[in-house]
Image 1 (cartoon, rainbow, N blue to C red):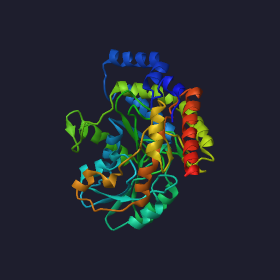
Image 2 (image 1 turned 180 degrees about the horizontal axis):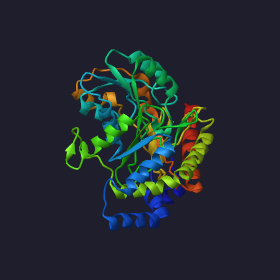
Image 3 (image 1 turned 45 degrees about the vertical axis):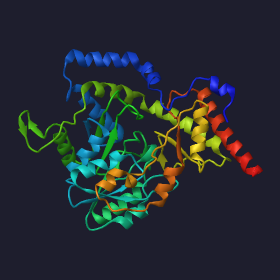
Image 4 (image 1 turned 90 degrees about the vertical axis):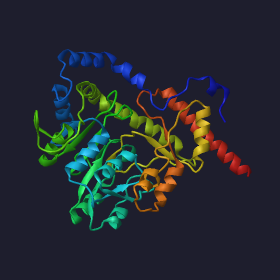
Length: 384
């Protein structure tokens, strides 16, 4: 369905890391040089400053920087004491990192279905899944949209359960005026280079208002140290290095501006999709969605993706295989479960480029290609 003019234009990547780097290159190189001049490469002033700044940004008492978003989840789960015999309620429609740390600790993930409109965990399904061994709920703020935290917290308080926000895709988002990262017992964020707030490698952070959790995560991230050669508990090496901390601090200063650009692009996509057979993502009235991903739905998803690819526009699918259907879960012996909304979403979702470096002309081109596909599809269906 593409035109000759489409084929002669430069491809639009799904993410343009080089463009973002060029916009802050001088600051980044200066920060790296400063770290290398000091040769304090972990647990230094950049990490401490990032922790203070990020805690303030999220409205949390503590932030503990770690090596990745997966580390953030693993250490939070461990600090809560989750382990063999414990059940943790999680959505299946998420990246596997939400689930894998539970398996490593010996806890059992209990998969529940999503809200079909919002893609986030359905509190009604959470309530139905609570059992005597349930110890925690992990709402995932998927694609940048906060989960229904009022519903989740009401269930958690009634049953005495911990709540861990998986906020790896939602830095800067808010729910009923409160930032994500301040809505549960603790929250995990990722700074991997694909995220809205990124370093140039891996990185992550845990936020919490609980002094006990913050202290335990600090120990667990650094071999369980109480002193240089004193180890209060068995821990891991999950530290964030100083260069990544310095880079993330630079990015944090620009996060609000970049988030607003994402929201502007998302608004243009959503307006353009009105009146088509393609379903734009819904945004709750009481949240700030930060559009880490812009995910539409189509019952002709694969055809749409092929059409956009032919037009030189990259897309993604987040995620094509739900966690409960992954081989790793079968191998672990988790009980089979049917999650119809999750499984249907996995067949229909498609992510469009939504990064701040997209020009208005590129956004126009993406919109034009998507709308052209819908019009051509409607014409074919009309003839049939």
